[in-house]
Image (cartoon, rainbow, N blue to C red):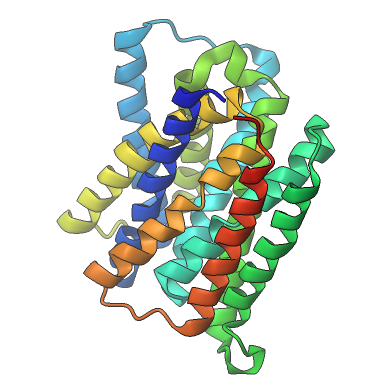
Length: 292
C-alpha cells in the first residue's frame, strides 16, 4: 500500500472528527447551519487559493469538467455540510459522526458499482457487521424510544454520509483528481459548493448573525478539516482502492467521541458503544483482506 496515501487519509479522518464537536458548539449557540457551512468553505477557498498559488501558480478549468465540479460541490460541499450541521442541531455529535462516517461501506458499494472495484468476502462481512453497528446507533437500541427530533437528526447524518460517498467515488471515476491534482480539484469543488451556499443565504433571507467565536470556529473548520483535510482525502482516494480510505475514515467518530467527552461533557450510552464496536469489527474484517 501507498503509506503516504494512508497517512493522508488518517490525518483527514482525525481532523474531520473535530468538525462534529466544534460544529455543534456553533449551531447550538445560534449560528445558522447554512452560515457555518458557508463561512467554513469561504475560508477553505481562500486558503486553497493562496496555497495553490504558492505551490503551482497555474489555475485552469476545462469547460468539459464544469458539470463534474458542480456535482461534486452539490454533494460533497453543499449537501453534505447542510445535512451535518442540521443533524448537529438535533442529536449528539458522537451519533452524527458515527452515522456520517459509516459511509466507508457506502463507498465500497459505489466503488463496485461505478468503478468495478472487486470486494472480497471479508470486506463483504465487514459491510454486514458495520451496517449492523450503524443500525444499532441509529435506533439507540430501541426504536420506540427515539424522539422525532433525534430520528430526524440521524436521518440527516445518513444523508450526509451518502453525499460524501458519492463525492468520493465520483471524484475518482471522472479522473478530475488525476487531471487537476488534489489541491485544485478540492478548490473547484469547494468554489461550486460555496456559491450554492451563498445563493441559499441570499434566496432564503438567512440573517447574517456574526459572532466572533463562531466565525473563528468556521475559519478553523475551513482551513484544517476542509482545506487541508479534503485535499489529503482526494490524494488518498486517488492512490488507494476506494474502500480503504473509507475504512480509515472510522478514525473520525473515535476522535469525535473523545472530544465530546472532554469538551461537551456528553455521555455515551451502551447502544452507541456496542454500535461503535460493531463498526470497528467491520473495519478490521475489511482491512484483513488487504495486501500489505
